[in-house]
Image (cartoon, rainbow, N blue to C red; front, side):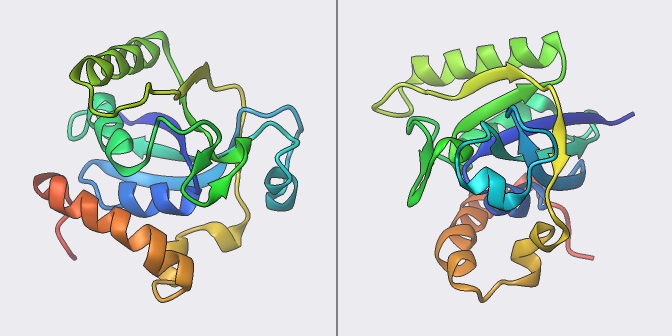
Length: 179
């Protein structure tokens, strides 16, 4: 039986590319969550006025990769200490957020955040928002599998590729084997 996690850590292309690499992850879908407008478009979300975050919905097998594991990857591949930004991407749509699906996911997220804070992994406090998932809206087709389809595009080479490389280095034992 699979579970679902919905995470926001800046551009959804970055998160999608990283989570697709993990054993136990069956599907990663880019989309929007946390806003107040129904069926937002990418253009709507980019204005920063809808309240949505760019998110990924990760469908995973908890017998292979746990929600805790996913959160440790999540906190490794983005900066959870910058409010409403990731690198050059600025706005509420790029905020760090965990949209939990159950009380158990909320408790796990609170525990992981507390552990990371106690370990002083970052100089600044974690500002990751923790909210129940209300509605997930899938992103438009052209956003799906973006890094795999556009590996030589400038943003992919400059921003996404280093995050994927970091994931591969730090979580090598958790990667899917090439087909």
